[in-house]
Length: 418
Ligand code: PMT
Image (cartoon, rainbow, N blue to C red; front, side, top):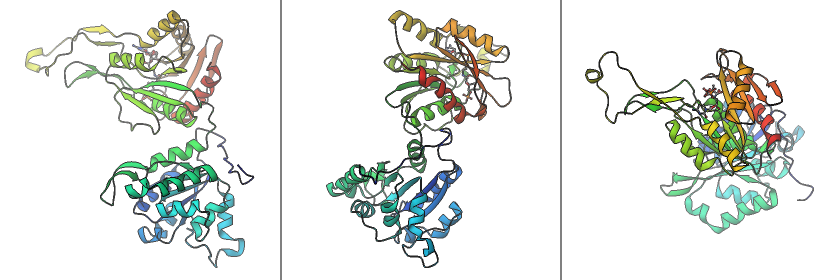
């Protein structure tokens, strides 16, 4: 690229890549403009400072006042604003931006951006800024399929270094079904976070397990545990942000699938074992954050057990589940190579010693030990405190949100990848 090269500024802490970032949200004139409200809300919640710039048509769909309230800042609606021009408003906004998001990017707005026009506030800021440009297209399916739009998008990517998120596929406001929906605001935020995170796991393939397993007793009852999946899901999102191709093998949780991650949903330990057999080999690392049940009912009933049939003091005969991590460790030794194996250890006392024992017993390279008896760590809470244990010693990682702890764990994992 020329010396107009866009300058990605990476976040100081990849756990909070949008905190403190100056983000311009440029709203185009399409029905999806209302979704830009949620986008601004999510960006602000993630700690970004948001300046909204609107086209004239966008203001017909959503009032500037709404964005002003959501962003806590004045909204730029005109290229020339007599009250703002002492320091050339659009250049000030363009210069301080770390990232510019265009959402919704209509076919017309994409064409004007690709032509390098600067005839309104949005196009002028886009042309003047050296910050990365993230375009979220939204339009009628046939407009999106039109080769002219495709050429304009390609030009924005090739000439302006723009990044594109979406469009999604589905039922559109114009009553057509197909690609053209604005990407979900959470997906746009994830794409923005990714642009601000150093891609130190690019080219890596990482498999992560998360959540509990449910071992069926009958069609309505199961044996389970208190894992919410939050730790494993945070690891998956963090690895994806750092550029890895991530497969998340998830037991039953209430969490939405992380954006940009392949998710394989399973119910019980044996299904998780099959999913691992399908995905673990050929990758760079397997991180086992799932709380896999050690036992399952010996035989699951295929009809709901009735109180009257099982009596008032029933016993459930149990069988041992396979130890999946130990199985991977043994198989890797048999094959003479394979992915880096990272286990977790959920302990209530003598944490490091038990973690060391698991490291040896399961044949893995690293164990992340958490004291699950602490009120702010382990099962179901939003924070964790962990110690990374390997053959050489133990290192306590900083306490924080599971998102932050996930990044600290990946800081330990990344340099070990072969
Ligand atoms: O999901 P959250 O609510 O966010 O909670 C996070 C967590 C507490 C579940 C997570 O941080 C954690 O500690 N996960 C591992 C829980 C566990 O099962 O620990 P364990 O010490 O029993 O097992 C040791 C390792 O062997 C784990 O990597 C586990 O995935 C694996 N294992 C266990 C049993 C089994 N049959 N097969 C296994 O592979």
